[in-house]
Length: 165
Image (cartoon, rainbow, N blue to C red; front, top):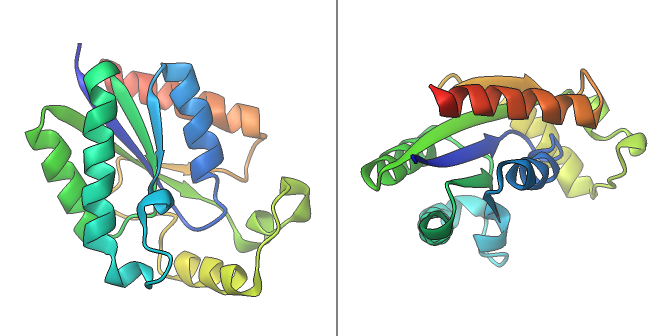
């Protein structure tokens, strides 16, 4: 069976980690939160190569035992190219899903997450920079148009359709 590396990108708070964990469970795959590999003492742009290499290493380890790894990590064009090439060269087919949501829905307290002032600012910047709809992603999914379970069901359905193709 083919191996798959499924990336969930998007701005802070769009649902990458929550949807990623749930999708990994439904696909019997592994899960990686890319932020776990970043250096908290350095800005993200100073450690992006180190973080990307660590994500690949962890992903390859998971793919030894499982058919899929889901990675929650906001992607720019450079690390998209890196992940596409690195996983592809290793025989794992990458899928890139962009998660999109409005600022007001991301910070809505009913979603159950509280953000710092810095995170509020970062969310606005990431939305303005297009993190919710990168043109190089295979699929764009709005996470604020339906319930969590309905969004997860759509994500699973689209992922399984893609895996089957």
